[in-house]
Length: 262
Image 1 (spheres, one colour):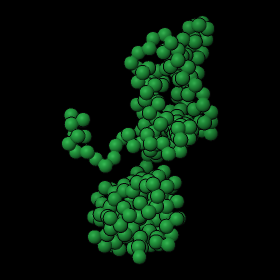
Image 2 (image 1 turned 45 degrees about the vertical axis):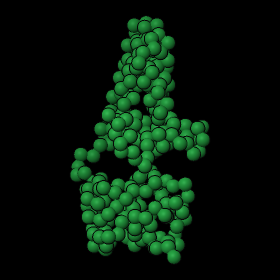
Image 3 (image 1 turned 120 degrees about the vertical axis):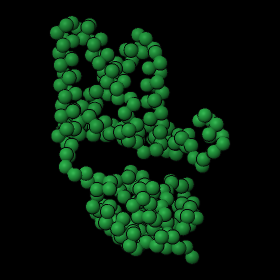
């Protein structure tokens, strides 16, 4: 049914587009490894400064457990984990914790498998000691995340005062027929009743300008919380200063007016 839908309703993009590596295979793998390392840092041990060391410790444990398991019995689980990790390494879109969620349970399983295998070889007390250390690390990881969690009012998304003021300005000053470029267009349309569109990383600035003109984009809303905004869009805005002028700013949000080309 998925293949039939693709044949009957082909889109302009595909998930395969994410594997078009522009910086080279080695560069893409390096950037992904660095990015996911920091994602693991924030996920596993976000409160303490030793989170980076903790991530460096548990990753080799998981890899060692995977190799031990694959050497003893190669199952569909090991095949899935290998291909999934390879996909993450070659994925050129922005990395996020949600990409790691499917692999984390298996990763913890391989750590436990490694600890059990090594503990059996070393003896009963050594196995208990390794299990105690692993349990203590997991407990500290959970405690660090719990200590960082806010239990007060939700400040992000719709509850963000800066975003609310930005949307209010758009409702008051942006004409209804003018489109706005934003990374979350459906959210912006829902809150402002204005047409909105996302952008894409074009081959050159001229291609992106042409797309903006085709949708009658009059404004660009910049939010550095999005990695694509903080890297790609920020540079695009700096290069396009003659045609872009800031009309509103509140906190991290910046609204730029797009001047028509002559």
